[in-house]
Length: 152
Image 1 (cartoon, rainbow, N blue to C red):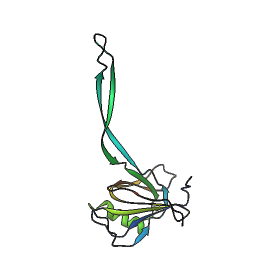
Image 2: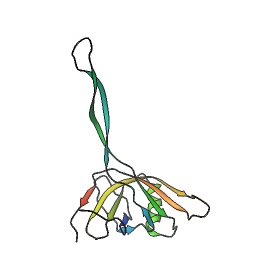
Image 3: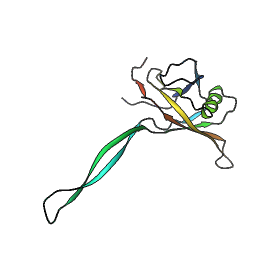
Image 4: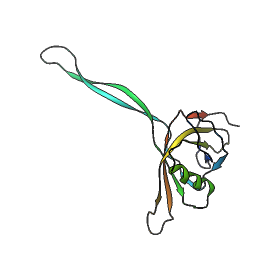
């Protein structure tokens, strides 16, 4: 199934959570979302050069093994609206060391993604003189991403 992203809505909980992920607050939409980035995992890998063991003219090949899995940083771009309730919470999350729940709801309203993340950066992007100011946030998911595939 193909999922359109135009019209997707990004939310942040209005209160941080602990490692167990219990959400104590309400979901607040982050306004003016322009780019959603990516959400997933990647592996660090170890490589070793190994001989084929045939004798004088040994050939070597590289063996690769997965070492550790980590979440990929998610970069989101927003139109900068200082009075937007979601962006205000995002700024608080960027200044906090706590986990914040996030939720991305696709346009059909039923397919979604939920995760806890640390907001590791939030910067104003000025770009060119004839552009509007943007916000660029980097989120690092800290737990498994919960995927809901059932349309409502």
